Length: 255
Length: 120
Length: 131
Image 1 (cartoon, each protein chain N blue to C red):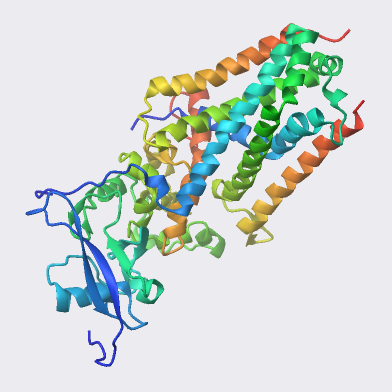
Image 2 (cartoon, rainbow over the protein chains, first blue to last red):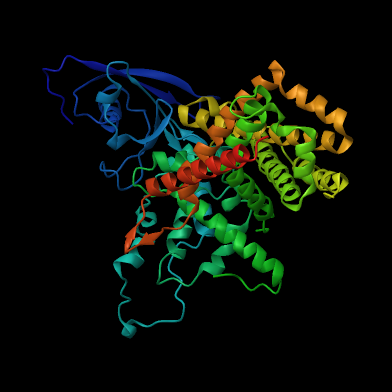
């Protein structure tokens, strides 16, 4: 990207650096980046990589808050670097770190393997109530039916909520906000019949019961998913299921 | 994955929390500040004779046990989570201590309202 | 991952921003909910023991320490009530009236009103039966 030669303002971007081949622990490195007030933090990082230090490593893709790749900690707050602007950190500058609660692979890149595994456990796909063929046609939904799950379907898997969630940091076995929100997204979809199959995850300590409603996940979510709500609604469902199981122990799950 | 037993304690936590949210502040205000200071309500509102009469009828007994028990279940459940949140390693033993404390408090309250007897 | 990843410690997480500190304050209210329940339990025990022990407990309630405790407890109970209703909508499924979703703010307001009403009822009940 080109910076107009007339700009004389710079902003300090302090990045966490970690090279697994040579470092035993992370360090910080500050870069003075030419600043215009329309630059995103991502553009700042790209300037560093293109002009100042090609070794700086970070993830990005769409530049428009839909791919979920560019999650970072900006001054300790989980945010997407592509939709965070340097003007909000000018003139003091910004400290850029990889998302907390995840192992650091290199510089600003984290290891997402745990999340991908958690996502698998919630069966994030439509499980039909009975077998269907193409000839059966489309499944219409009323606006009200779609409204039940729509906001939960907006998740871009950016992992800001995992960085926000202290319970995920304290209990790494916790399924976590995004995975549980996606679990609820499918349970709440009128086309889905898989709630019973997903109850095992909900009912476990690693399911909804590790959540203490800190609520910060919903605050940082860039897409308005509100994972806190998805999880805590299911505490009531899990409780109903628990007592149903207690009274009818032959495993008849409450739908 | 193993089914968690949290629902039992969470239900009690929730009931206690709702009760504490609805009447907790006013209870503290009345019993802890207004009556002892004689503000708006005379200090004799909680005299021995009046409290005996209160504790000797069914409503009074129920109110005392319910408030004490649910507040304890709510508080103990949250305190246990507080310890976990600040990084203390809390295993099933610690969990048993906290919830056991609430159960013990409940049993004590029931025994005490029984010991106070009935009016007349 | 074949290379050596770095895991950062979580200790002190709750000091890192205002949301976390507010959460810990809310959770800390449980100290005073428990303590107040114990005050009532002790009072109940003194009541069962007889006139003199109960009157001693009643006198203790009027001491500066007890009054200070109750002022702080009142603050934490109000904090509990406020935060309880603030998060209540998150625990409920979407509620629809006349086809539209009831906004969270309405649910919080309803809860707060219920608390005010319950508190008033309690006060009036004690007021009307005062000696």
